[in-house]
Image 1: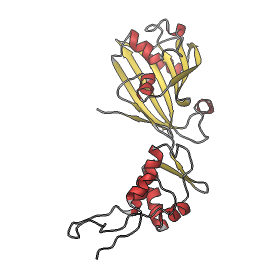
Image 2: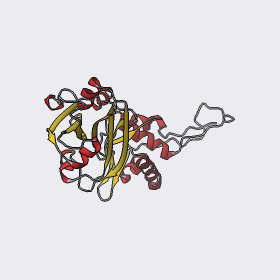
Image 3: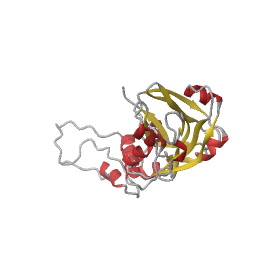
Image 4: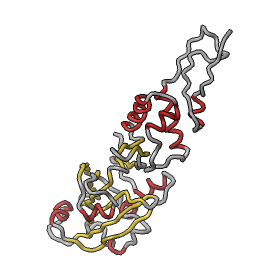
Length: 267
């Protein structure tokens, strides 16, 4: 006579049941022909799926502490090395972050931006269903020697703006931009809390050519403070120079916290 194992199935893991969850290790569930080959999902994969579902459901939020390895071992009735493997793989996949002495946390959400296509950051944020906000720190004439050289200007001043862009009230970009006044003479008269510099310039004079450089770099204290970053945390720095006709129109440095932002592109 066939017997059935009274362990919880993988569905119990999906449903997030708490008391003494057991993983489905029965190679021959009742009702299935013994001649039919069955491959049970490995226990560590079931735990990974459970963790991912708790995150996607919103039960475990970005930055939140998840149950300890000991708690998960007790909950699922498996060896500690099984739980450790599941959490280790999710950490490698950047779903979780592990802090020595503190525990395991849901990784902060990482926002993506295109590199090779020049896009308006406000549009990118809106496309994700989120709210964009801009805070203008600087909007004035500037005569930085490196900026003037990048713009191809023999003498200044150029126009200088510094703006912090936020997504859902979280700063994700510090924009440090110099603009050629010959190309955009009214730049300093704009309200960049209502329209980004990128959108303003693309509206008036679409870019004909662009040059990019990308760096992993630590920001200075001023940039770090406005991006609400920890000391020692690196940034992704995108330097970009664009042309309108034969003139360099703008040179910009875009600082992004590496822990919550990454750049992507296709060619």
